[in-house]
Image (cartoon, rainbow over all chains, first blue to last red):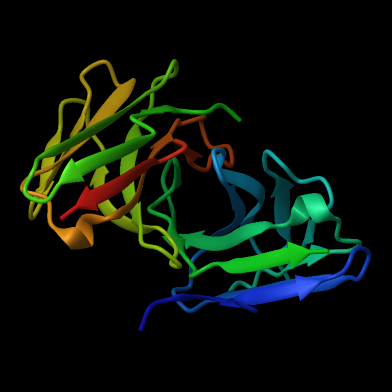
Length: 115
Length: 114
């Protein structure tokens, strides 16, 4: 089954404790992206990657890091989490078509709480 | 990145009613997508639109790509309880080969009263 898998789905942590949210897709998509969803703000892009070893900042990259060592994986790293990073996070992937990305496929989300 | 103006923010309707929501942008888009997010889940694509004026249906859902390429609407006919959720529009602006992702609206929260 074609899917985007995120882990963990739920996490409560404390300020400053490094954490990683993993994302894996089995559709051989070139493009992957991370979003955060907050009430009243919709989906905001954190980082994206057009292909292996190619990453770039989205609209709200501060406090986050990513890596793209393999095509299928795109982990999101919070080196020193803070309470304002409490949010619902979504990983998404898309095939790269002429002119830009195709349709985005989303994971089920990871709800992060930073105390 | 820019934001799309999606309205309404929320809708409280009776089961069986028709629903209409729309998105507008100051920029021209070459793709419009409509997603639905069920509680506790990630957004799922409902309809994709690629040409100005295009009208596409998916069951009780109908979406149109505006002629000006700056807007799109989604209609749901004869709503049922499982239509509850958040509906997002998303637009893509072709930038000549750059890493252009999608710009999302803030969502329309649909609530259906029995």
